[in-house]
Image 1 (cartoon, rainbow, N blue to C red):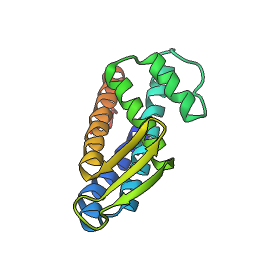
Image 2 (image 1 turned 60 degrees about the vertical axis):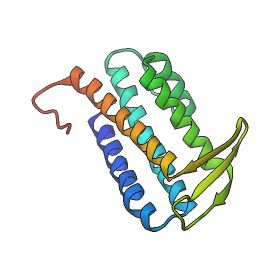
Image 3 (image 1 turned 120 degrees about the vertical axis):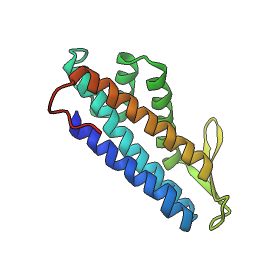
Length: 159
């Protein structure tokens, strides 16, 4: 679990850098897409940590292989609103990176990606991706604290 949380922490650092440095100087949709890919990787680590935590608590036997099955299982085991909201964001990010999209105002402050999804268009710009990052960072802290309180011990290396 700790290695999964550490992997998520590293992805969050990369996302932070991309938002506050890369996106500041290279305002392109490609940077927005790269940030979303990093966020998905971070969520993968967080979900795996939650599933390992559930396994430790004897709430499940095996960890599913596919992201869709993992989301369903995490949603079933951990019904907190915080978990549910972040699972929705994770699934949205997965849809956004695969969707057809239109680029708007590249190389400007209001660079945006408008993704065409079945439910309608979703616009992602600097403000939206920053908000997604804050939501994910808060979720990481929530999961880390949840696991830490269960496993508190002298060798815990959480930050």
